[in-house]
Image 1 (cartoon, rainbow, N blue to C red):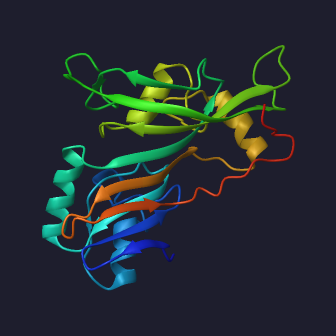
Image 2: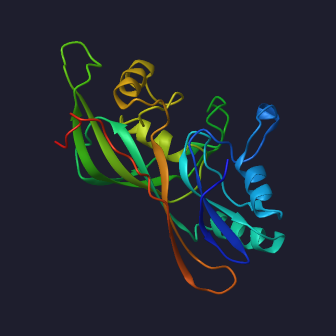
Length: 232
């Protein structure tokens, strides 16, 4: 697999990560043959350092450093919220408004019971880009299912932040096996002809850690909808 390069200079490189690809191997996924870090390292012929994460199912813009010093500077910028991140999310239902802010503290690890874990501040801005009604029956008595395409901007980087926040406001991301609904996911996967987590890292804005230049990195989702999936 060759990873598309979105940006590259002597300090950093941005790629378009496909859905389903790990960022790097972990103890729980040591058997996986491919991960973005190893693929990119071999593709460029030099070491690379991951500076942030995308969930395995999430596609889109993924940034790597090309030196330990660049990794340190970029990591600090992520930790201090000095980067603006924008995602696209396809969700169940139509939000009541056109935009909003989810301000809901989150436990550090979503895979562990929240009791006993400290709650961390977490806010996510969202905006409706498109409302659609699809000819898919997912509830008794209804011949169509409402879905919406949102832009989501997490103000922090909590694990599964966007996924957990959209579930919190009752608009889970389509294809989210952890925070969504299985029957709905399966029905819409059949309609879309693809089973995946419909979350995409579209944009990253930052000040270059060495030159001070403002960078606006973009990764087009390229999403299209089947016939009959008309905007509302």
